[in-house]
Image (tube, rainbow, N blue to C red; front, side, top):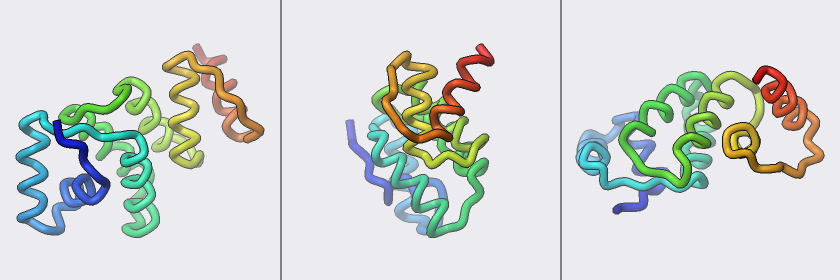
Length: 125
């Protein structure tokens, strides 16, 4: 298993360097790539801050990527990507919300937006 860094995923998503994108695609398609949540957070940051990519587009890219890579908890990361595309929460808060709502973990925070979001989503279920 190969642990990917953010640059690998950025090249795969943007395909702005054909040679690098192809190498990355080969590894991803072969099912050889593992991505840490911290790396996903960096990818979100770079796509949003450097490339001005829309949140929903980032969400869609990463949800699709989850079909081909391994990560610590696919259900949690999938929910985090969905929440990121639907809200204005920062991505780390989306991960925390997903750990709470999908993973059943208790989250300790003073962040009112995060608490309100988790309560609202929990009430929907």
